[in-house]
Figure 1 (cartoon, helix red, strand yellow):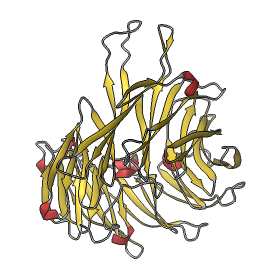
Figure 2 (cartoon, one colour; figure 1 turned 60 degrees about the vertical axis):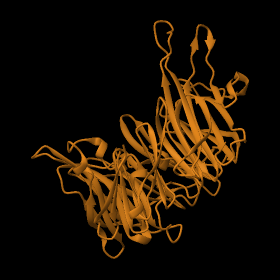
Figure 3 (tube, one colour; figure 1 turned 135 degrees about the vertical axis):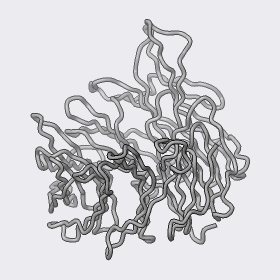
Length: 498
């Protein structure tokens, strides 16, 4: 086992104490991996003993993500089934979101403990302590004059959610879905799961603090509805709804801090993009705003950290980076900004005065920026690294869980794919960096699984995630788990997921 708990990497989450489901998890000794229609349990540490211990096959579907809590494994996903009959000449696909719970105290023989299923498509989830909160949405529709309401399935059978149990606000939406939020104790199989259903518009993003779930629903009139659901263990209560102009980008456009909710949005007025920051109280009533930030520039990324908001926008391959003061909740204001080439899609705190940005430079190549915001009026890019190619990309641009960072190890790593236009070839693997205030961003090397593939473009060998345990780096693709030394990236071992 590792010597201390912090010497292995966890999922890159937004809020400390609020875990996010992912396709790879580790407890510091084992790695749990979603691949195809199975979940693999692997003894990972020490490296010389690394091997597959067991494989959980999920019948008739593909799992989406997992949580691990002590000796419990939660597997989440969506099942699709085409019914044998059709309505008005159309088949209505039966869609259900499931969570399976397993006892993994014996890693070689995981035991199925139970299942909870909701009609609708899997949207998102979080885990706080032993409670998993997961969300599913299904369209509101009528078949043969019958309103089709959501259903829940447990070990004891099926129950239809009554119309009287569904929350709604007396306001029109562009279209309607039933969104169900469920709470399930993964450590206590006898505790009845709780749930709450809201009739609302389409769901777009979800932010979760230790006490609240915020779900956004975009409207066609350049507005976004926000729902606040209070959570405490299995208790789920809908407590507020609010509306702000514009649409958020993703979960990092939102934040709760000192009983205030902050959100950054983008609006299009007269075909001109604009960025905004709004501050709301716990009733989701607006109390402060900063609007029309640099009209003509597109909002690319946002991150709230304490009393600051960082925004990155773009215009004609330029990347303005803004530092915004949100301490005065009634009067947020711009403190300073910087213009650099390219655009930034993901912002990550290095420390309270330094920010890491991942984006694309002016040559369509992956770029890592290292910002110093000590002087908030004149932020500077103290270093940057661009992948040298005509075209490259990284999943971090849209999936923050692919980003690996450990400040105390000076470690930064992310999957990268590179297209070589001259030869028409493609390389994919993990770029590994040292990142320090003294030396900036320095490439240490890379790790790839391509040598195992029949063809270099075989995406099943593309590295999706990287984690570390002690001094070992583990890279995961759909087909391979590869072990390399974290010190010099020397190859140690590989495990085939078959």
